[in-house]
Length: 476
Ligand code: NDP
Image 1 (cartoon, rainbow, N blue to C red):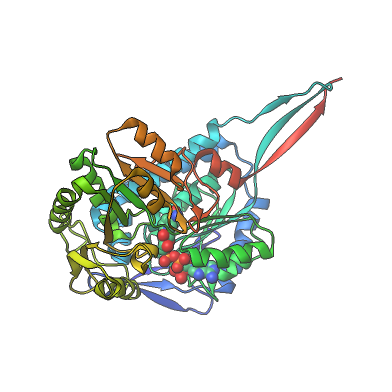
Image 2 (image 1 turned 90 degrees about the vertical axis):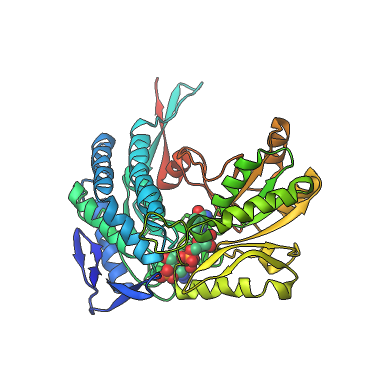
């Protein structure tokens, strides 16, 4: 079995007591990797190393161009190691290799390139004053950032947090999800190879509650917490951050609504709606899990949609032909299975899909679910979509906004006025019109309500990972 250690102060290390855990490949359902199991002691060492690297090391003091050069070198190495990184995420959580190697790895490299350039090219403000003074702003690194990541897009989401933190001159302690540890260690090895100084990027593996995750969020030596995960965990982390007044960025769950109007290009709507719910087996915060179709095209849409869902290729996620892999873990499979098994008793019917072999759930299309039922309210986080007819624009806006989440929404229409009107009325951090999942790293990313607090991306990440300072000078 391969071994993945913590990376602390420039070295890959075991836990002080030698404890380990295994990562299970959800396709074979066998352990494939042994991982160092950290706790408060490893967090202590990692935060101390990050603190030293920030207070005494070259990283915050070197110019942005030099930091950017090292981060671009890291991006190059990520692409050179695309097979290894992609396979690590695929074996850890069952994501098809075409997505991990083909999408997540290039996006991880892009995260470093984008934020390296963004930090280098961003200007600050000068503020002419009438009083014979002038003021200007400086955006200074904050110190040690704690990053806690989920298992659904391990490498991509970890780098989404790490890249802006590092580009702005901070040091980082990352705790990956326990189900997906491997790519984080590989990334930290590559960061050292790229020339990042010891202690700048540290990785501590371990469990969340009562262990490494909690020790990290409660540690008095950290200056920021950036977290992506479930809304319930977000509440716990928010409370921990409040305990020592540390700003926290929370990217949490979602229950994306997706409206298909009768005037939509149906081929386009079907194609994106399939991607919106079945990419990564629906284990996507942005998943379009509540689909609403205007009544005149309901039957035609659902016929085409279920045909496309049934045509998806399920199988070994390591094969290029596979479009949908197993769910990420036994625990998660059981959770999603619980939703599939209770469709009929909650008033709906399964039009297509259902349970597969092993930890597979087939692309599952449900109709007839009441708006107040669990399947329409809760984040299932699997390849399961509810489809509901609607008549009017007002009705679908009300249905889409009838959720405690507010991460994203989609709408399909050829009517430009409707596209703008409905986009403005939806309560969501991102609205996609006639598309899905298209991202610009300058755009704000995050959600309202139970979907999170704060935004990341472009200048929004700068706001979070820097301390803005005003300098006021007397001229006369
Ligand atoms: P969890 O909230 O269970 O875990 C996320 C991370 O937090 C893991 O590393 C976990 O460790 C850690 N953790 C758990 N409890 C604590 C604690 N008390 N203190 C500190 N750390 C803790 O989320 P999942 O991993 O299940 O991820 C899926 C969720 O993430 C979904 O709700 C999804 O919508 C959301 N998500 C949101 C995104 C967004 O951008 N808004 C993007 C992607 C996912 P461990 O794994 O060891 O328990």
